[in-house]
Image (cartoon, rainbow, N blue to C red; front, side, top):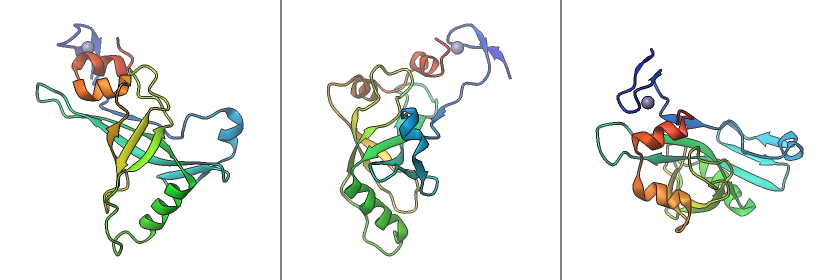
Amino acid sequence: MASVCGDCGKVHGEISRYFMWRIPQLGMDAAAKLVAEGDYMCRVGNTRYFISCELALAFTDGDEKPLGFIGWVEVSAAAYAAYQHYRAAEETLPPMEAWMDGRLANPIPGVDDSLGTAVRFEVVCGDPTPYITWVQPGTALAARVQEGATVAFWHKAAGLA
Ligand SMILES: [Zn+2]
C-alpha cells in the first residue's frame, strides 16, 4: 500500500528488504551453459561454480529488521565439491567449521564495484543459504558492512534514491 515515506517524504509502497538474484551475473555464452543443481548450487559446464549465499545488513539504529541480499558466490571446483559432499549428508557429518572462500557473482545494489568482491561464508547445518561472514577489507562493500544499513542506503538499494 502506498503511503508518504517518513524518511524521504515521497509516496512509495512498502520497500522490499530482500534482494535476490535468480542466477549469477554472466555473459550470454556462459549463461547458456548454466546448470542448476538444486535451488542453491549451479555451475557453468565444468568450469565455473556457484553457491547461493546471504549477506545480512543490520540497521545501526531504529528497530527495522535487517536487509537481506541473496545472491551467488563463485567458488573453486574443490570448494564446490566439498560443499556438495557436505550437503548430501549434512545431518550425519561433522559441521563445516571453516568459512569458505569465494567472490560475489552478483553486485549488491547500492554498493559500487561490489561484483567480484572477495568474501567468506559460513555453512550452517540445516540452513540452505550460507551466511557471508567476511568481506575483503578496503572495499566499498566492507565499508557498507561496517556502517550497517541505513534508511538512505535502503532507498538507494531499492532504486528509490
Ligand atoms: Zn522513502
